[in-house]
Image 1: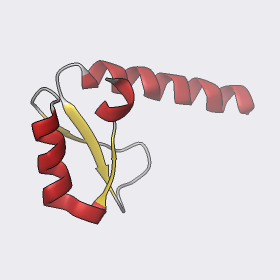
Image 2 (image 1 turned 180 degrees about the horizontal axis):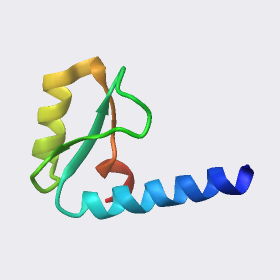
Image 3 (image 1 turned 135 degrees about the horizontal axis):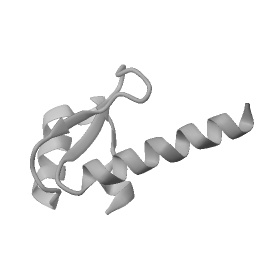
Image 4 (image 1 turned 30 degrees about the vertical axis):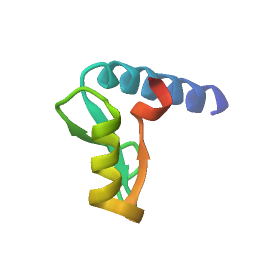
Length: 68
């Protein structure tokens, strides 16, 4: 069971890294686990600031911050 959890985490990490190359990936509070919202644009500080201003405290995580 521990190995299965590790493999699932590894696959999820690789998938997010691939997506972060040309998309912005983020989650809001209340989103299901392992579900992500995407924006088809490249990551930049301008996009980060836009997301933070638009969603405020509802923004749970931006995956691009982990992988860039």
